[in-house]
Amino acid sequence: MARRLNSQEPGFDNAFRAILAGKREVVREVDDVVASILDGVRSRGDAALLEYTKLFDNVQLFREQVRLSVDEIESAYSECDRTAIDALKLAARRIEDFHQRQMPENLSYTDEAGIKLGARWRPLDAVGLYVPGGSAAYPSSLLMNAIPARIAGVRRVAMTVPAPNINVDPLVLAAAKLSGIHEIYRVGGAQAIGALAYGTETIAPVDKIVGPGNAYVTAAKRLVFGVVGIDMIAGPTEILIVADSDNDPSWIAIDLLAQAEHDVASQSILITDDETFADQVASAVQDHLVTLNREHIARASWENNGLILIIKNFEQVPYLVDVVAPEHLELAVADPESLVADISHAGAIFLGRYTPEAIGDYVAGPNHVLPTAGSARFSSGLSVLDFLKRTNIIECSAESLRTIGPAAVTLAEREGLHAHARSINVRLNGSISDR
Image (tube, rainbow, N blue to C red; front, top):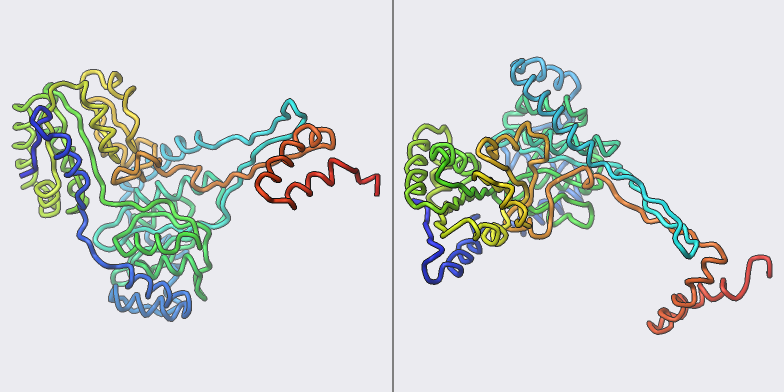
C-alpha cells in the first residue's frame, strides 16, 4: 500500500522531506559502461555503433540499414490507422499553435548614453532527437520535441530510435513525418547519443540533443554535455494531486495511476483534507489496478512510491507543493485559482476537476517534457527557447564611449587587467583621424 502521512502528527515535515529525498530509481553504476561506449563511438564511428547495437539491442544492422529511407517512412505512415493519424494531426496543430506564441522578439534600443544595445535570437543549426523505442513507443513525445525545434527554425533535426527486429513503430514514424523529420536512424541507447554528439561516417554530429531515455541514455547525455547541449537530466515521472472530497474518488485514483503506469520508479502523491475521501481513493486505486494492462508496473510504483498526505486545511497546500516542486500538479478543488497564485514551483499545473494531467500529455498544447525530481525549483519545461540562442549586440560611438569608458577603465585597473583598461583608454585618448 502507498504510504500515508498526516500533517498534524509530530515529525511530519521531516518524514515528508525524507520520503522526497529517497532515491526512486534503482542505483546502477552505469557511467563507466556508458563512458566506454561513448569512447568507442567517438574513436571507431559506425563500426562501434553497429557493434553496440548488436551487443545491447540484439539487432544486426549493416551500415546501409542505419538510416531509414523515405519510402520506409511513407510506408509506415500509410499503415497507420486513420483515427490515430487524425489524433496525431490534432495534437500537432495544438502543440504548434501554443509554441508559435513562445517565439521571442529581438531587442534593440539606444540608451541615455547614446549606446546602441540589443539582443537577437537565432535557431540552432542541428538538433538530435532521441525517441525511445524499446519497451514502449511514444509518438506524442516526438511531437513535443520536434515541433518546437521546427518552429524555432532549426535547419536539421536528426532522429534516433531503437528498432527491435529492425522495425520502428509505424505511429512514431508517422509523427516524424507530420513533424517534418526525414533524417531518421534506427539506433538507440548510449551509442546513439554518442553518434549524435561526436558524429560517425553515417550520422553527422549535432549541436544539441533532446528527448527522454533510460538510465544509459540519460547518463550518456550527461557525459556528452559540453560537447553538445542537452535539454535536461530527466528522472522518473511524477504527479501531485490536490483534491477535495467533492471529487469522484475513482477519477482521482486513475489520475494517480496514469503516472504510476509509466515506470516502477514513478511517483504519485495525493494531498487531501478528508481522510475518508483518502480511503475511498486508495480503494479505487485497487479497483483500477486489476484492469490495467501495465498493472505490474503501476502496482509496484504505487506500493513503493505512492504517498497520501492528510492535511488540516488547504492553506498548507502552497507550502507543500513548493517543497515537492512536482513535474505535474493537479488542483482538483472548487477554486484552484485561489491556490495557484501562491504556488511557485511546478512543471505544469492542471486546474479544476475536468483537467486530468493526461490531457496535457497529448493534445492540450503546452509541452509535456517537464522538469522532474524537484528541478522545477530552478528549471522549466521544454519550449521553443530551448532551440534558440540569444546574442547580445553593443555599439558605441566615440562620444558614448567617452561617457561610460572611464568607469570601465577604473574597474579594469582595480581588477589588475591592464590590457583591458588600455584597450579603452587608447580610444578615449585618441581617434582614428589622429594616426
